[in-house]
Image (cartoon, rainbow over all chains, first blue to last red):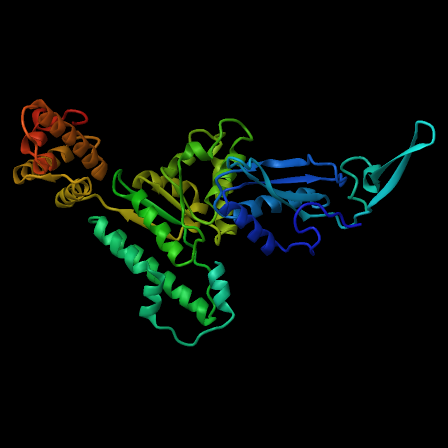
Length: 141
Length: 307
């Protein structure tokens, strides 16, 4: 099941050329861009691991593409996303976030039912991928 | 080079050279270079040559002929104060107008910004600077400091390796300009042959002559709305000759410093006599006494510095 988080996730995957243009747009707005990765695709998993520090004072997307290429080399089998943070007064938050890399095989989620308080049920979603330990979730499949 | 790519799909048969030249707008930059930079004839010739080559290369791309991105990395050698940084800024704007760098900004760094203090500290630092310079020009001032032959564990070598790699693999993304004093740069290139071969243009900045230094002084004053009186000009000619003979003379930079001190003395002279009306002319003109008060005139030629 293809996970849909952030911008453009209902579109076909962006090509590198398209990613570069999006990043350039971010830089032209003076947003700080950073790269994050994870292998836990749960939609409520908001804090992904950071790939290096956020990149400030860049003028051209080539620098970020260079980092992205390096991140893909190491974590090519995980989800990688690009965030752009707007530090201007009143915003001070992430303005755009989009996935730029996903595992080949996304196994999707199952519904877990928990029986509580008599006949009540609690529902939650669990990714099949997280059945395996961190770091091995997408490497085999 | 996004503009080159857009054009490439429709090769054109003939191009009006003058129109192309005007469209790109390098004419203005070259004229500005001639106007604002005094002397430096060999440097200007070389920049003209590079600009022409780039213009032709651009046309070749449009005509659909084989055009591989020329290597644009440069090295500027010359004594202090001969205008290396200023020229680097101009080069960036020429390259930007011709579309060989995308943004045309200059990131100016020295060893401190590239080389870290601890092990594992250098690579991220160098990479961060490279990322900032992407799409523009990376100007490494006093580049020979990167390599310290006396210390084989020096982290400078690590920075050099990363630089070389990016200079080779991302030629489209950034242009590196190395600058430094002639003899030390020669040693630097001799011990790093990889650099020598990756740098296409070696430009040497000659020292300024006395008359050129005077023109520079007058240009600097004009920019700040000052001017020499005829006597002051004469005194300044003598000042240049004396100052040049002293140690630690650094061409245009020494002239700039001398002018700053002359302005100081001029202001002091004006303020010394408060009971009068000053005219625009008084405020603008620098008298011979302002120049002659300099230490250069009073001390023996062997004395240090010079105010």
